[in-house]
Image (cartoon, rainbow, N blue to C red; front, side):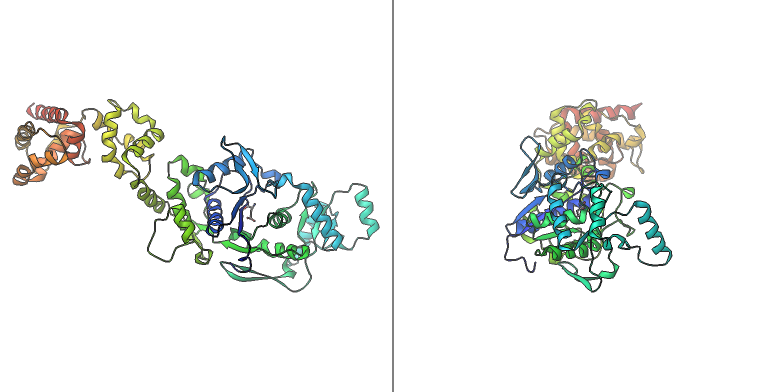
Length: 499
Ligand code: GLU
């Protein structure tokens, strides 16, 4: 944070509403938010909708829903009100670019008047031909500045007759354009490699480059934080700032997000929309923590950072230049950690909300469900995993007596007779237990199981209760299903062995 430190920090997130918010976008928004909050500054949201072909009707709402879900709430710009309607707040609006067309026009006229921008009346066919010619000659396929030398009369005549035109920036012929990136240090581009960028399109809309510079200036943005893919655009922006005579904000370009095979994170390899993760019931605190670590680390062993801790600890200086691997297992790890902080009650409510089909499990009751939550919550990374447990027949036995092959009751090296004997003894030892809980159940049978072999005794007890090869331990299940049901299930197991 170099030259803007004396000003109030203003950061912005400036997505284009072309679909859902990408996890990379969430990271840009989060880092921008953290930088602003850390310094008591302002975080604003601007919608960059100048590319009308890629516009998606619900795009703005989708982006806002994802940001609010994550707790990344803008102070200014495009926001949601209490009824979740899209509103705009702040003194430098409008904050939706398609509502700012006269502003861009005014500044484009200013650049033309200064001689640093010019009208271009070239047709698409001519531009294509020029590009091809340059490419064939192995040159940078830049515009050939045909319209730069038009006379005032020619320009006026073209304008008067309504000839389709754009406005282009006149890039300096020589020299370098240099800027300082807060993550990467000094970056320079030779001006001769830069094209005379279109600033205003023929439909009266600005290009991204024109709009982003005008808006960042008008909205008093001090720190431009965005993805690495925008680095090559920045020299054009710097030239524009200089042409206007405006202060240049700090810039920071965040590292790419990568798949495990080092390719750029893409839909083909998994979910990339934040909404996919919210639907899968990941917790916002886990998502933020995970996303924060995609390119940043605090330089200590600490891994868990709630949003307010991120605000305190985050700094752009600790963001790395190299690509960050997107690893969903790590997200699952964070989610498990944050789930541990939730009460059983909260977990139960969320499970019912995300997996309502659990209510259709035969024998389901709310009472029983509340009892099983403490036993199953450790086995899930996220709430929706419960659906998988149901599909795998992993929890049905809690609600209704299990159905199983009687052979499963008999441990590998044992016999039906011995197993039957153990189960009979278990019943006789469990009958007198008056205070029924995990410890008292264990106390009642533990010595016997130890003496006879724990596998020999506890395996059939567990199978009698769950009907499964793998399940929680028999004491937990017995505790949950209750004394009567425990004895009834063991008695049933005995009856199958007697046949
Ligand atoms: N509208 C651009 C995007 O969609 C914003 C780039 C920037 O932050 O300057 O990513």
